[in-house]
Image (tube, rainbow, N blue to C red):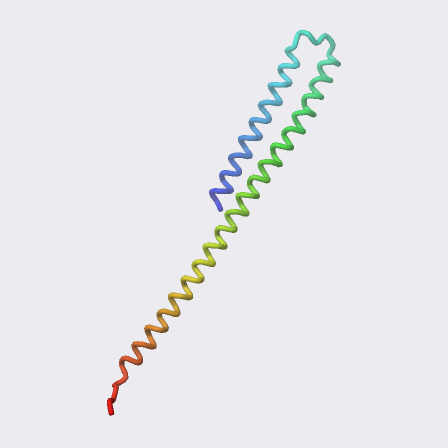
Length: 114
């Protein structure tokens, strides 16, 4: 569980860094674009780019959260199955020990043949 959480935290941090980097690069490209004459046009394009990126980033984060949830469910299911198997094996072992104990008690009683 801890390794899964650590992995998720690393993936989330990397995703946020990549998203921040992309947003900054897009803004920088628009600011350095010489074909855009007016400041208002640059601001409009920056705003549009940020809105588009925001929508994309939200989708990426949702996708990552769904992926993490699926991994969590699979891990919980696997743990439940393992606990069930261990319980069955424990029950069999206890039953076997009880039968061995009964046999040893019966074997220790003296037999009389008539």
